[in-house]
Image (cartoon, rainbow, N blue to C red):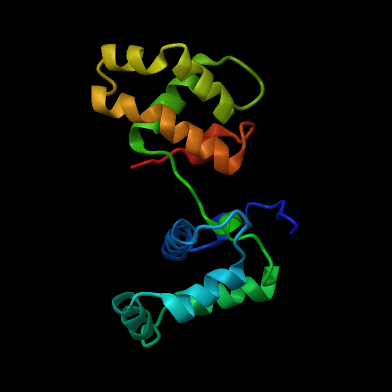
Length: 166
């Protein structure tokens, strides 16, 4: 399977992105999940209450999620890796940590996820708790969240791309 080199996740509605991630989480496989597998799951195995709301969505003036997925399949092919179409955001606490690293770094290259992880290992979370930027329980979750992002997107992914602005 060929990974798409462009940021195609930015072209996907938040609703479809969330649905794709939910299906990926439900399907337990070591193989990459494709758009066709996502479509098959939505059509054949989606819980009845979600399926009913999807059917109702067809009467809306907006494009339904299955229609949006069909357009993606037409553009990128059935074998396109589904995770490429999921747009991930850091939690608000991790976004604050990323911004802190970005503010502290005086470099030409953008801050990567691995640099944020390194800062967390070096005590960034504790410092942010001490400064009142984070609560203790928020700081406890940062390392697992950054590790999850690195696992999915790679250690060299630009951290700023995951910032959540609320």
